[in-house]
Image (cartoon, rainbow, N blue to C red):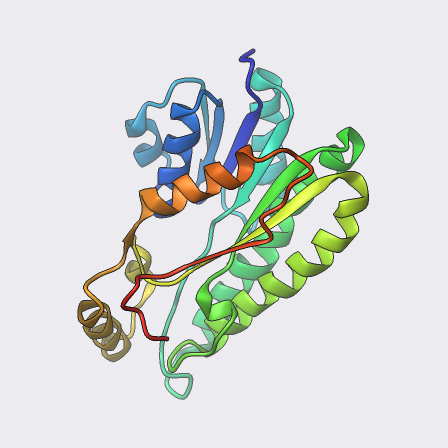
Length: 241
């Protein structure tokens, strides 16, 4: 068993999740990496990593993955509730099946992930939850209707959890990024919305690297347990909204 505590991350196969796994691994932490695609996580070959195929819609899969990671490296001290999907489209022409997918992954999946570690953190009276939201959880955007709804959900739940878990010395950090250089656009199936998003991204000179976001998460986590960064809201300097 390693000396530093275990860090668990959903959606760890790419983007901010993968960058965060790498940042914490470099800092000496074992990492439990969970995602639907295992090959990209295996290719990272991080030391003291535990890799699990997990769909956050499946509560048992997450619980089993956490049990596997904790059996090797001790209790999860931070869970990055990161897995999500962005099916952006004009609400008038968006298939309802895309709403279902976002609601199931971005809201139910969030609660399933929290549930897997919350009671253990309460019993130990320590731990950190990092909740992936978005600037779209603070503002509304065209073609983001249901996506915004799911991210507002994350903000509301996080506020409630933060109040509840403060009595148990457990921290809740909300991460609300703007435009980041990740593969989030792979979830956008509507061509008109995708073209508009890419145009706006180009106007602001591109997004911020996922490694910058990962370093902020690490810095917030490394503060004393009695100190809490409640929210990290990061955007490109040239992002206007």
